[in-house]
Amino acid sequence: MSATRLDGKKIALKIRAEVAQSVQKFVEDGNAAPKLAAVLVGDDPASQVYVRNKERACEKAGIASRLDRMPASTTPAELLARIDELNSDQSVNGILVQLPLPQIEGDGPALDEREVLDAIDPLKDVDAFSPINVGLLMQGRPRFLPCTPHGIVQMLHRCDIETAGKHVVVVGRSEIVGKPMAMMLAQKDSTCGPQTANATVTIAHSRTSNLKEVCLSADILIAAVGRPEMIRGDMIRPGAVVVDVGINRVGDRLVGDVAFDEAAETASAITPVPGGVGPLTIAMLLHNTLLAAKLQSGQ
Ligand SMILES: Nc1nc2c(c(=O)[nH]1)N[C@@H](CN(C=O)c1ccc(C(=O)N[C@@H](CCC(=O)O)C(=O)O)cc1)CN2
Image 1 (cartoon, rainbow, N blue to C red):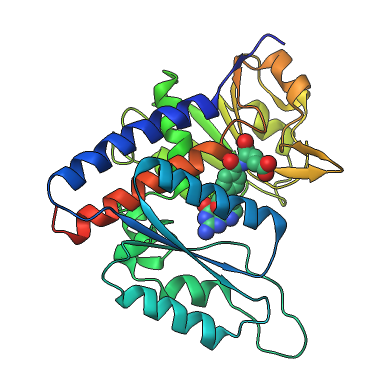
Image 2: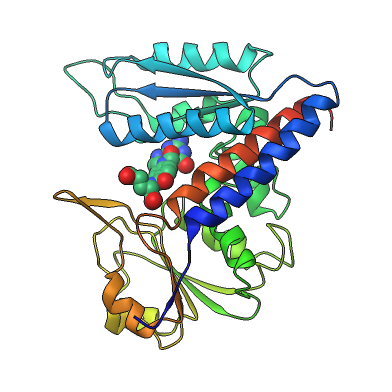
C-alpha cells in the first residue's frame, strides 16, 4: 500500500471534542443543554447500532437525547403524529428519523420516506434532509449541512486536501450523500466549509456508460453507490484521493464500495471502511444539534 490512510475515526474524535467544548460554553452562557430526538422505526440491526452510537456520542458531548422506538408495524399517521409532537416540544432542538424506514409488513399503508422527512420542522432538521434545507444548500446559503457530506468536507480540509479547481467524481446520486456532496463541492468559496469548494464535479451512477473512464479522470473520487468493492484499482487515477462512503456487510466482513487494497496501490490517500467516513457522520450530527439549539435560541 502506498496511499496515506485517512483516519476518519481520529478526525471525528477531534470534531466531537470541539463540539463538546462549544456545548459547554453554550450551557455556561445560561442555555439549556441541546437535545436530540431520534426516531427508530422497526428493528433493523445496523440502524439499532447507529442510533445507539448517536446516543452515546451525544452523552459524551454534553448533548441530551431521547430515542423513540416504534414498531415496524407503525402506520404513517402514527409516525407523522410522533414527529408533530417532537416538532412542538420546546425542549427538543434536533429531530432525526433513522433511515431506512422498514418495508411494509402485511396490508397496512407503507411509510413514505419523503412524506416523513417533509414533516420534520426545518429548524430542527439536523440531518438536513427536509426540502427547505436541501433548497437552501442548493442556493448556496445552507442552514444545516447533511452530516455525511459535511464530514467528508471536514476531513478533506483537515487533511489539507484542496478541492478548488480539482475534478471530483461522485459515484452515486442518493439524496443523503451523492447529490448534496456534489452540490457542496461545486459551491463558491467557503459556502459549505473552509477551502473545500470550487471543484469541477461529475456525478456518475448506475447508468453511466463509461464509468471506468469517468473514474479515471477524477482527482478526487467519492464512492457512494452501496455496492461492495465495485470501484476497482484500475479505475483510480495514479495519485487520486479516494473517499469510500460505502458500508456493506459481506458475510461477517464490513467492506466499502472500493476494493481497498487494490485502490491503495494507486491512490495518494484513501479512507478505510470501517473507520473512515462513518464516524464523521455522527460527529457532524452533534455539530448540527448544537447549531439547531443556537438557532432556536436566536443566536
Ligand atoms: N437519519 C439518518 N439515517 C441514516 C444516515 C443519516 O445520516 N441519517 N446515515 C446512514 C447510517 N448512519 C447514520 O445514521 C451511520 C452509518 C455508519 C456509521 C459508522 O460509524 N460506521 C462505522 C462502522 C460501524 C458498523 O460496524 O456498522 C464505520 O464506518 O467506521 C455511522 C452512522 C444511513 N441512515
